[in-house]
Length: 169
Image (tube, rainbow, N blue to C red; front, side, top):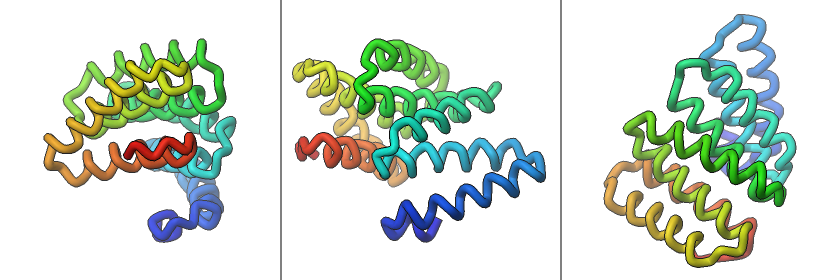
């Protein structure tokens, strides 16, 4: 996590891959799930969307009854597909992510979903919908007064803005 926290995703990648091997050998399902989620986010930050998509689908496959992990994986899938330009699949992922987020009372995933939906609509070039979801995400982050929600929501908004060169955030 230190390499990732200091903006070194390539260094973190090797650490997390080795950790995944260890967690798998120990059959640590929660650990495997958490590492797959981190790997999805690392690959996304490296603009390796196919790999990010693979790990987000792994999170969903392994989540079973963990609705928060399922929502996290679905949101990451939505973001990756949107950036890959696979908009029909991204539309299906949007619906899945929305269902998963609705099953829980998790402000962090709600903020991430709104930010991801904004990215999807940016990819569709639907500026009105993109702005609506973006503004909803920003308002939720501001209203929540939760560092975790703010950190997660702003990180996704920032990552999306930097990759689309839309610096609204």
